[in-house]
Length: 187
Ligand code: GAR
Image (cartoon, rainbow, N blue to C red; front, side, top):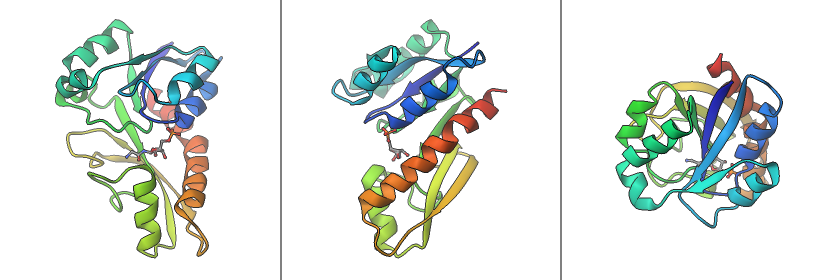
């Protein structure tokens, strides 16, 4: 049984999709969810699913080695970023090299990098007149959104789309694909 740690800062809908997918799989489980925000919606979502969460204060994320200690304590094999909006520092990346992935709500390398997260991404996609958007799963490296791409899936951008309607379409794509991409990486 492999132990997955999910890092999340927001609502946690991807965390929920991952927990539900692996429930009863026998191959892997979400052992813990770590957040940088005490008030993130992910905490109540995980409580409802019986998954433990922990809020790690900002200064510990800035160093990273204390987070590695937590991940080791939890015997974590694989780290999954799902709407995690804090920088992941070198000690974590080095300890989990090749075993730490992120999902980004656009077709990288387009609309990635500093400041490009959540609704900012969808606003930029619509403003630029793109006809399609999508999701990218990639390895986490020191470069923001710059690690090797593992998987992409596309969806249309409709002329009537708002950032909210596009976000909903992208979220559906994330929930459909992220768990199976993780499963394949764990094999
Ligand atoms: C997701 O769309 C994810 O791709 C995005 O935040 C959302 C989190 O939703 N991540 C980023 O923008 C990272 N740059 P969730 O909290 O409901 O899973």
